[in-house]
Amino acid sequence: MGGIRAGVFGWGVVAPKPPDVDAFARNLSTGATWLEPFDGGFGPNNFLAGTPEFQFDRYKTWIGERHPPRYYQMLVEKMDLPTQFALGAFIQAMGQNPGIEQELRSLGTAARVYVGTGLGNVDTIHKASLALREAQLVWDRFWTEPARNSALAASGERPPEDPAAAEAWRRLWMERSPELGQYLQKLAAIEDLPVVSDSGVDNIDAAKIAAMREKEKRRMRQQDKWGAPDPPWKVSANVIFNLHNSPAAQIAIMSGIHGLAFAPVAACATFGVALKLALDAVQSGDAKLVVVGAADPPPHPLVVGAFYSGRVLSAGNHVSLPLTRLQCTQVAGGSAVWIVGDLDYCRGKGFQPLGIEPPAVGVSSDAYHIITPSPDGSPVAIRQALEAAHAAPGDVGTWDTHATATPDD
Image 1 (cartoon, one colour):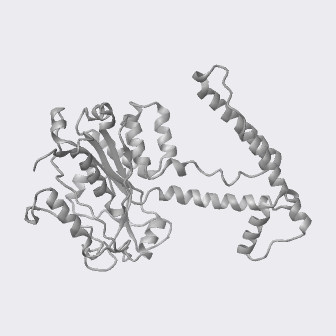
Image 2: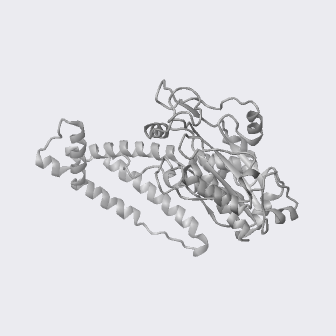
Image 3: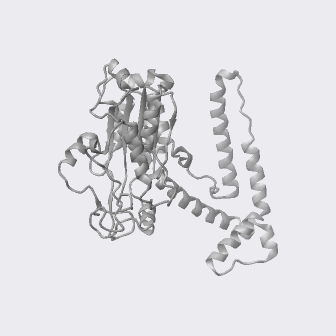
């Protein structure tokens, strides 16, 4: 096979039972299931799921040697588990070839990060949504008290007895409150406070911080004056700190990688798509090293319930046997991260491949169904990969199936 060859120069894993690659190798030899009863708020249930055994603080020293203490604390407070899983797996991957960390940093835009997700920050969105709804209900009730809504007081209307109708009624009358209009007018004036720097551009950051603090003080005084609850728009900023791209972005920030960093999102195929993009970048010469992988959260009630309702999740309280029944999926979380690079270039730098050389990845779209693919979908990708690798089916020594009892398995 001609052209640039790619090798794997680091790998890391966070999975149910094994928190790292060493434990992963040991656990593989046991042949035991890594699934446990789902403890996600349903109470007694028949679901089995895989929850990673993961402690982010095991990486605290490594991170602290490279960043100020506040950086680790920020990761703990603001980043959700998929990002932390990915960071842990990435740190593991760098440990297998000393010096590759510095090489990733020195390559500039010739180092890239393609770390995606299938589900994203489900728990973060779930918690924020619940908090938003509760805050909105409190807010609506506050501004529909007659003392804080003169329009409603003048109308003499009373809320309906039906809870759902009363909720809609309060939302309507909250928006009509003249007193809320006064509150918002004052709040707008606070938000319009300018950033003033007496020392020119060099101190603009300090001026921004000072302005933010002053705004917060005035907002607090405004809240005290009205006795108002926090407005519903004060949701957690973690909603935007944990986008699908956050694992890739945080890997780039933590390691100083300046090349393209983004999240391929392709459901169960995410890792394969990320690997395909990495091989394309290496074989085209656009990149010398690519951090590639995927991360997903631990099993969550929303996900477990949705997969069950989609008729693809096993709920028989036993390990699924692939290809034997309709519902054969089980849900797990974790992360897998590889460092893929130009084989000759990396060997020239003294890095040793880990025994895997991915010659090709095939990709295709089934164009049939969002969950259940047709039997004709995957073979297109398989043939594409074999052709790109100049291989025949008989050359393949092992197969890794999707194993969800879908037709093309």
